[in-house]
Length: 492
Image (cartoon, rainbow, N blue to C red; front, side, top):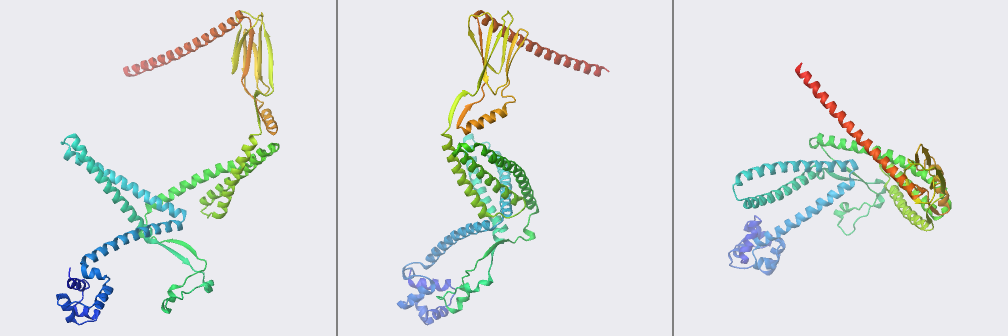
């Protein structure tokens, strides 16, 4: 494009007459007229002045279409503006959330979630209606073609729905929050001496370029007029906060119990003071658990009572507790390696019983390990091995010998004392196993005892079957009686 055309385009785009343009460039109207008609060309200093006034370079003015150049620049400016607006939106959102209180953050998030759920329901309803209409219009097509077209429509609809939903949610978020957000800086008027002026600026601009070095406090203000409030959302937020406070109170009760438990555990750890590193590690770990428990209790209490948390103190306490917990675990692991493990039963006891043999003798064991040993003898010898802390009974009821192992029974306290003693001696023992029963008798007598046990089991199974059949017969009789009563009522 000619220079003359570019000059004419620039003048018209800026809504200037030839006189006005000539006045800005510093020439006569006739000179501008000759430039635009191509009769003459401006001198180089005038070309440079036009480039400076209307933001073009010499190459663009002399060789290119300034209209296209301007459109290109405007499109770049728009793209840059969009990018700047996006980053400004993100920055402002982060700043707002960092300044909001917990309840305000929760309210904002709940609002966006509710809006998203409503949009999801609406989108699904519209999608279902659209799917029905599409099926009615294209249902006669071949099945593969129908599903192909349906898939295309579904993809386009999902993409549009996502874009529309995101834009709508962001717009509502902007209107409801970002447009009402501002940070108010409370200046400390007592520190006027700390104001520094920028000496590189003119005197007229000095008042606008003061840098406040005084300590500033910030607070968040959400200006939310009555016309923008939603009673429904506010009610939901209050209900959710109330539920969260109820959960927090219940959790506090649980933490209170655990706090007492850790305090008791800390006291009991003194029983293992002889174990060295194991005791030190357990003591430090228990103290760390108590501190963490206390911090959680304080956080929940402040939430329920709408009080602020001392973040620095809480952070230091949590970090210290975690470090102490790591140290305690290391000390406990080192201390455990110094222990000796004994798999045999501690303080094992053995009792022996002799019984006369007859045809019907039978041995029944409850929670016992019974083994038979062949030995040439006329009577029956029973040896029972068990822990000193076990509760084992051996009784003879007519021809039946009953052996019962009731576990530790009332010896739990004795076992605890033995465990404490062994731990202080850096030992780990086996304190309880089920009773081991060995029956010594001749081969014939062993066969008789086993057969009697089998017969007894068969009797028990038969009795159980009879009881089950009896129960079923009773149920059938009751059903028949109910039917008979119904028939009699119908006849009456």
